[in-house]
Length: 126
Image (cartoon, rainbow, N blue to C red):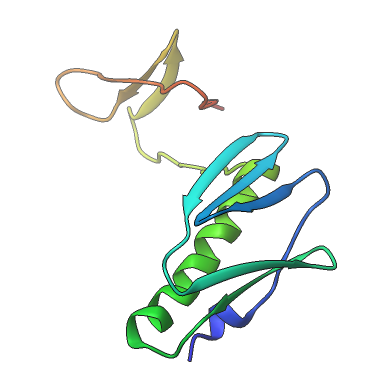
């Protein structure tokens, strides 16, 4: 039994979930995401909640039930709030800086590590 799959997903304001065939589309203030719904999994909107249900008790369908619910929940979070990841660097001589479109990391190597920042990503160093 998938305990995760049984939980309803609450929809925030300004977020719309649409099902077109086997494709789930989630739209919100921060963008639009699509997800191919696995066979045997269905979606319904009820009173501002999204309910993910399964058609059968087959092992593969049961396994995908909770996974599909978690992925749709993450899509809703991503288009409404976005995601934040805080990284802390501790140590003498270790530093990070944003230089143009690159993240410059000095982590004790003989050379700095320059990583290009992907489009759509906001990086701040404090």
